[in-house]
Image (cartoon, rainbow, N blue to C red; front, side, top):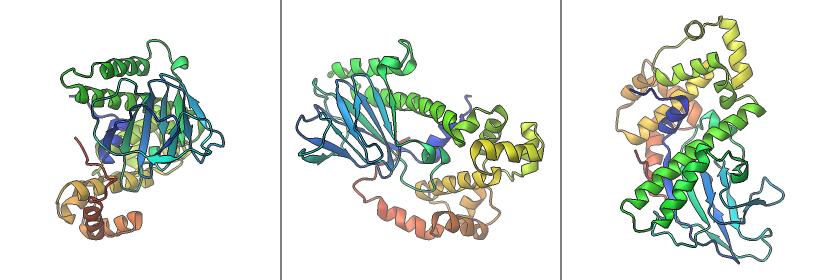
Length: 315
């Protein structure tokens, strides 16, 4: 049995829901707005140039054919074929499942939605925009190879199971792109990505993901990592920018959110599943972290499910 790695655990435990957006033939004289308040955006340019406009960048960023762009959660942006938005009408991208793609499509886009907070530290540290240039990737780089497969699949419009294959390939591209994001973030600042490059701290983070309900103490985590208590605390803060037990609490709250939204388990069962002894202590920590009691959170989540922009979670 293959054990889940930390990135796979994050995508599972944060309740990611995804949508393949049908974007055929980017209009020449219009711009398309992508609302990403709660989503990570992914764009694969099939034919360029395409310009990405974001408030964080003073100048639009030009993408060429084969380039992949990843927009961090909370970073709304526009795509256009023009370097300037002046005088361009703006359309909002529609949310629909993929239809039969037009042979003249220039960009294939996906949205990966993380509806609830608190965010996992990785998504909080993601930059507003990461661009992976086709010309800078090795010829046999997995991202380049899978992108090529997706382009081939787009051409085979009548092939059986085309939409399933395209969604699967887009998910693979998304995951490979996140690997590049992790590698880039690890070079820049302390955070979850940097922690993955430290074998012992990465081991501690993996243990928390694997056994979230365990009654972890700093002493036991240090022992399992082969470090002293002091060394673990110092290295964890240096690489992660947080303390081990604070990070554990964040993971538990994310798992609690998932259980409250995807199951009808009573609060006692949710509390036990994530390592709390009783519903009262769990509820106190949950309200402090999320801003709502578990009961009020469940009620709001039920109302949010009617929101047009909320995707359905898929297994």
